Image: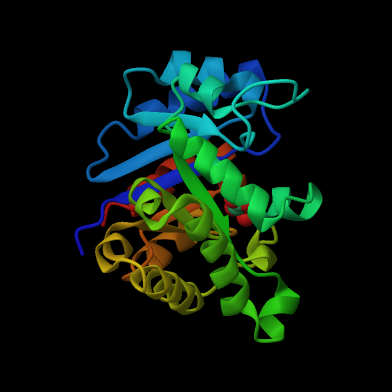
Length: 252
Ligand code: PGA
């Protein structure tokens, strides 16, 4: 396959200067020998400077969890991709289901955020995924296809060369209920086939992560599936030993 692994932590709204310092230092030292796997942590905005100062020069990248669709202007409370670039962010999560569901971000806004990140050379980690009700009513593939199509229509297929996709079934996030490796694999394969309609090279090259209750003890079997290239890790990314083991599991 030839795709390198990638593991990104999504700290969500957790942390403090003191706790982050310990966690970041432990992650840097615990992942020092990683080969053929990239790793990153997506931290709350106020801590990006701290992440930069600890991670600069290490092989752990840092990023944001959200970004404005606008580049500058009178948008109180927003943070632009230009600002994230200024702070050395290599990645930003866009379209996380918590943003979609709790903060009303629709597909079109997610696509605009994706494009704004691209315009500043930040790699967007585009989250897609269905709710339990959508899965149970057989709509999962349609929901995910639409989430992808809106981005491809707005930003163009070429932008997927420099992006990462995370399949995160909403019913598996923070619930302790992981998709089985086969359930996740089926969706990852579907995502790749959907992209292949536009460009098969991009479909074969793009990293597709699985997210939703990934832990040290289930990461290996998920990452062993042919279309799963790594993970987007919430809760377990706050515990250094867990996060490090998950990064190591993406090596094989
Ligand atoms: P979780 O979160 O690992 O805590 O389930 C994943 C995510 O929301 O990205």
